[in-house]
Amino acid sequence: MNIEEQFNLIAKEYDANRKKFIPCFDEFYEYTTKFIASNIETPKQILDLGAGTGLLSYFWFQHFPKSEYVLVDIADDMLNIARDRFSGLENVSYEVLDYSKEFPNGKFDIIASALSIHHLMHENKKELFSRIYNRLSDDGIFVNYDQFCADSSEINTWFDSYWEHQLKNSGLTSKDIELWKERRKLDIECSVEEEMDMLKKCNFKEVKCIYSNQKFSVIVAIK
Image (cartoon, rainbow, N blue to C red; front, side):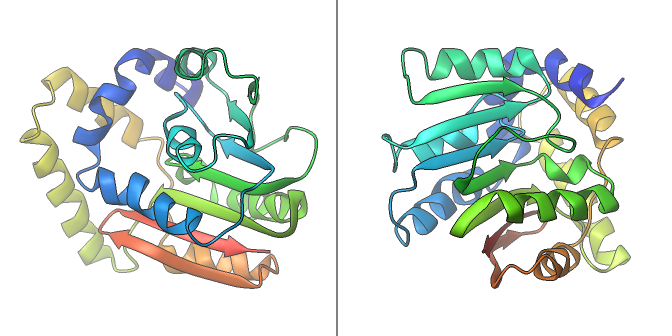
């Protein structure tokens, strides 16, 4: 089963279970977004890559309700939930496409992504980061809220086993956990350090990990 099929399969349950799958949910999504938003001017255009149900854009929208949002995802069923979430808003648009191969037209002040890029091969990550750099406006910002491996295989085993233990005690059903294990087979994680190095090689002038909690980190790169 490919990524599109996997995420269409779980679209309706996706948001409901997200806090259970991410033990540090509030810090990962809400507080880091608040921190970034408090340090920048209102962006004109925000591009959300792998937007899914629009959860990440929802947190950005709390700070910048007048910005133009473009939500991109390969799974149309996921975007249907985003369409319901932002129903009636003319400043939110949607495109069904594979962002690893193509982008919407235009330049963006913010390009953000949550829990999506770790599905790409490392070479594809590098190509994507270069494309992101070229599509950002001057001083534009890329923010990646993602899942990473530790730079030590032993510590990464600790992270993985502790995460699975947390999920088993989170109230998720056995079916939820089995589907999660299937999705995990699609993961191609790199370490935070590896990704920061990729971004620096794309000429971003500032690259910083602003949040990290075991598997989950948020990296900011400024053009």
